[in-house]
Length: 402
Image (cartoon, rainbow, N blue to C red; front, top):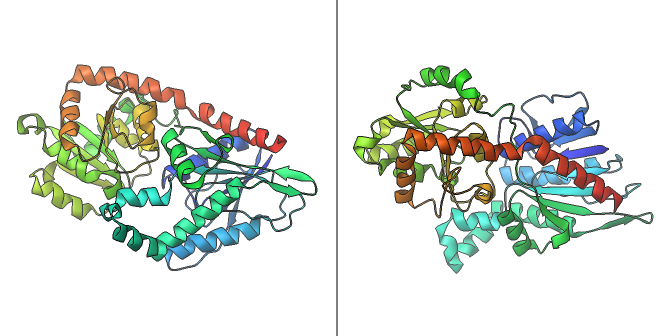
């Protein structure tokens, strides 16, 4: 098959959506498919010479306009190139303007719906005035315009020269599917759930022996420390404040050898101030963004990730594959594949810092942690690249035949 991927950033290291697209393209190339990437920025080269990069120009300044111009320009670039499938990873759309044959499209929703995100991001959305303010915000208007266009295209069947092409939506969780159907009324037969995948060659329990001591030494961590790991770039939405506050509620006599290791880009100074407020600033370490993230999983003991809003977090699967029990929130779509108190823990809301502290305390016991770690790795093993990417390839074949 000749397949086009549309993704703003082409990268294996910059985020969950980007890493998913990068690895899916590599899998399809190994399967013999011809992959063409349409992106604006390139951070890493493709692994296969069967993957061709096409740079899409866009607006150079105001970020919301960047995405609008990207979507419009990529739609023009896609026409008449003879693709069998166009796979979208984000808020982009493709409106055929005279192709010689119809093109089937797949929209993978990894970010969730923007209006739903705003409800969790801004408490003022609880009243009509707050909703009006957010609705009038130029950035929100552009993002929601792109979202509407994408889903309008996903609902549409194309007929060209007597032949039809259809569009399908992939969500990475059931709650994501419910959200999309609630806002955009996609028919049940045109939307399916395929959970995230994890690279089990890169993320596995064997990494502990390879990288644990070296990475701990680099971060000035003692072997006796129990390390809580947080990974994410949007510290506020990913719940870093609540991770710090939950750790602070652990009694001082149990907390003395606990460290919270934060990996990702964000306003570290703001959260150092939060840690200082609770007199634990020396126990919260910021490592910045890291390309070899598997080494930080290997150096840690517990993965603490209490997001305010998260359609489905790939970092949780990576942590579990690395043998870390996860403490996360119900809003995180990955909670659908977790067995609470068996392979990880699910708390109802990120602000329930008392329960976060209780789960941390429970996992300080090495015997308990070892049992849950083993179960976590077993759960993650069911979500390998092969298990995830094969159904995507089958979906491509299925919609081409329609």
